[in-house]
Image (tube, rainbow over the protein chains, first blue to last red):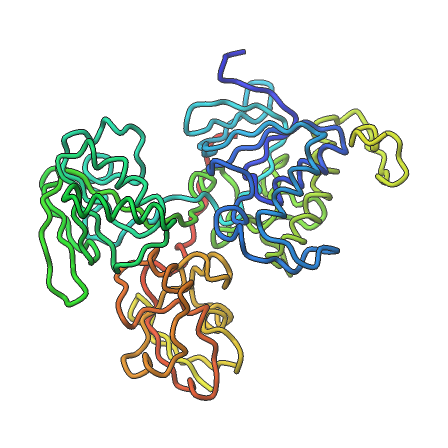
Length: 343
Length: 116
């Protein structure tokens, strides 16, 4: 076994509410789970899009926020000791010599299991790409959607665009190393902590950074080498900013991503499944939650929970073909209560 | 009442709308490809539209929350709105909106067979 390799019963792609509840249902069937998620924390859309928004349609919970739902699910699955792989995208899937699934992440981590459960919601969260003609040609050389190493930007002429917390955080952190730094935002107000805005304004007042109201509209350069960012102002005039690097921070959006290459039948970016086991066109690969489709499908967290329960029954047959899974209730089964560590 | 939607591909659609429905829901319900990732929670900016010039002043002005979320959209101007925040009413019968290209749902991926 290699150092970056791990074996488990079930690999769940996506750690949103449905992926988390799958751990619970699989756990009751005594199946061990590893989860992979591109975000750096559990909760999926509930954590990324609406952590503070109220959810009203969870049975017996009249109201809770996306974050509360995530926290409660994490508490509920703790006894089953799931292993999380955060900040990693499920990149490719193939079979081992002994017929198991080998999932490789974009960082090269390898997970091996007899069963795959895709609970990827709307797909992977990826940075929004501004609709600037030809921007793709500069990505990785002059356009960056994340800062991995500050040193990479030392001595560079930087343009940062956007209006959220990460924009201001990177403006403050990169200003000391940049040759020049211009912050570009469509309006004078920022969606950020007042303290952070204050720090940015102080840098601007000292002349250490510039602030332009507008939106990047054109890139100038050649052979992938960025030379200038043209910014369109609200009055329609433009300004050329000499630049080696543009950092657009406009938040995240969902793309199906590499799952499209897993060899599964797809229907309009959704994965068709049966409604008995929620299995895909490929045996032992299941799809639950918003990413699947079947006649009458409703994209509700509630539906995903139900799908997880039925999936777990079928997953057990793949992991332990020689064993029968006896259906039991957590209210009465001392065996399940021991698994839940309450008895 | 009706809603007119101009899609990024240049097509125009006149959709019957029900009072009290969000413009995003009307567009989605008629099967036009709108992204609307967060499902109408004013949390994602992927239902960005430009409303017709004549309609800007007739709409309930955007909340500060909507203005903040619009920071995550592109080519934002004074006609920009998140259409999950526009609720159809008699006064808005005939409303005209243009869907921003970034708010268009992804084109469906074809089946690709690898591995296995």
